[in-house]
Image (cartoon, rainbow, N blue to C red; front, side):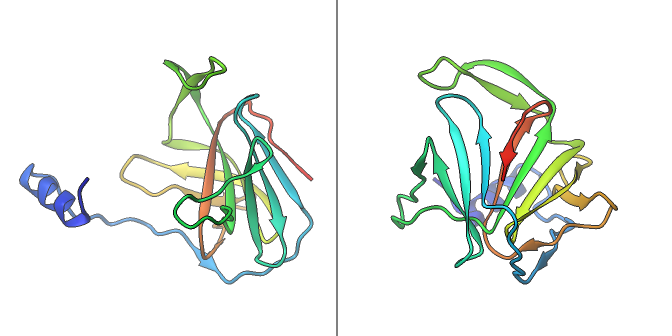
Length: 168
């Protein structure tokens, strides 16, 4: 266990720069206009992630294997304001991930690729870009305009490029 101050002190002691100049994500006020009620991200038969749109909170209620995904600290169901599905190049590692014998994946999180951004009960098809590890991933729509996210939690579901999520 450590703290932010402890990490900064350790980084400075090792000669690393402790400040960064990052382009921030863009945020907006909620503007619900729901046309989508559910998202399915079926990683495997064991790990089936889904979301159900909740108009009352303008958020996405998270489920795993059909069961509510509960935050053990609060006892509440996880409900991010934004869900991003980020398609990336990846390959299987040699690490067995679950009791189903599925191998974990290793992904390349720099470069560019397809993205689906779910917010306000809608989906925006676009692109993600992250030139290198020292940058924050940016999301743009089909016209190249930055996608403004709702303030609040954002869950990024990283999937391989050929993955087939579903929504309705």
